[in-house]
Structure formats: C-alpha cells, structure tokens
Length: 302
Image 1 (tube, helix red, strand yellow):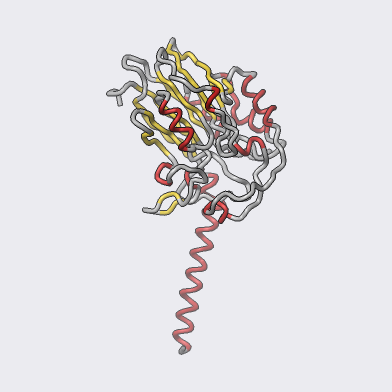
Image 2 (cartoon, one colour):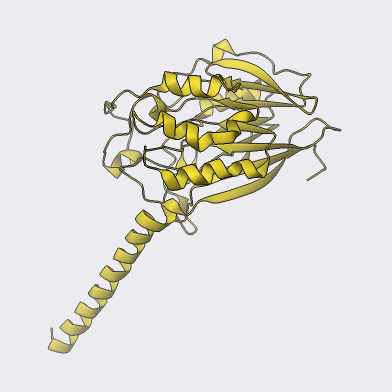
C-alpha cells in the first residue's frame, strides 16, 4: 500500500472511530435523559362516555440520586390526568423507595393503579447485552429490593394494587374496571385469580401487566378487556431506522415493542417504552424515555 493510500485509510478509520464515539456518547449521555411525553387518543370507551385522561408510567428504574428524573415525573401532575397507571420496574436500588415517592409526588393524590415488575423484586444486575438476544438461561441472582415498602407507599394513598387482583376506580361518575397480574417475566403471574368475563357495567375494562407476554395478553383479550397496558420492553431501548426495535426481552414481537396496537379481535395494547433502564445498560438510541397520556374516548370520537 502506498503512503497516500495508508494515509487515506487512516483518515477514514479515524472518521469512523470518531462517528462511533459520538453515537456512543449520544446513546449513553444524551438520549437517556431526553424525556418525552407522548399523547395518544384511544377509542375504547362505551358510547356516550366522557373522555378519560390516563397517564401511563412504566420502568422508572429509579436510583437514589435520580434528581432529574424525579423532577420530570413529578412535573407530570400539571397534565391533570384523571387516573394514573404504573406498570412496574419502579425501583433499581434498595434505597429507591423514598425516591419513588418523591417522583410520584402529587400524582399519588389522584386515582391510580399499579403492578410490579421483575426489578421491583430484585436489583438489576450487570450482564452482557447479548443475553437479550439468546434463549433464557439461568437467572442471575440480584439483591432483594423493598417491594413491600413500594406497595405500601402506593396503596396507602389509595392506588389499586393489581397483583393478581381486580378493582374499580370512578372518574366523574364513570366506572373503570381494572384487573392485573404479577410479573409475567419472572412467572409470578396467576391469571386464574382474576379469570372470567370483564365487568360489563364499566365504561372501559383495563388489563394491567408488566411484561407483555402473549400468553397473558391472550387471556385478557379473551375475557373482554378493552385496553391492555404493559411496559418492560423499554421500546427495544436501541432502535434502528427501518429495522425498529432489536429486541423486546419478552415473547412480544418486535413490531409492538412500544406504542399502541391491536390485540385480538377487540382489544388495544399499549406498551410504554418506559422512563428508565437497567443502570448498568443505560443506552438508548432512537427510543427516548417516555411517559404517555392516553385520552380514552368512545369509538367515532377520535
């Protein structure tokens, strides 16, 4: 190779290395802190019902020093939602419960409901990203987390604990029926405890779970739930143009890694891309951390 060709090759290699470093810096330092609010209208209410504003939170993965995230989440109170649903993975550290209470802030004064995710029970662990692309192996044990304290912090403020349970919330005289399961990712779910036709007197029937496993989604849909809310996928966390999400870390197909889609004949599924992530794998690319304000309306109103 001539000296000029070697110099040209070195220049190209240097440029590629520089581009790679810039992308990595963006994915690690910028996008994970660039929070987004998504607004979606969902036609799932019984005809003649008043719109309901539902704030869907998921995967906060809070650490004790997450001041920026705490400020952003607590500021969502300004949206004046009618009801809040938290689909789990709120914690990431054994000292994160006070941080979670600060983040939820005045949202806890509103009607709400919650389930737990796998990282509410045990701390996230350091692991190779390749594990998200291979079949499940033995679980890496993590440090137990104070999920009971998290449950008390939400339930004592009136939020429904939907851990394999059902419940109702009334908003402006309109009855919302909820049912939820414990974390399907770690197979804590027990759908049989809530099985049966959804409440026909409610203006909307909502199924809540952390990991959107098709085996559980199918049962909710089969029982007539209108809207299914989940998280866990982080929207793929790293997405590529055209390709989309590279993984969902679940049995869900990649095309549904985030956002609204249909499930079965008459159910709608909303998967949140979440607000945080495993602190050992914080990168996001083309997948900003998010909360979603879902405006539920009757069919024909959207």
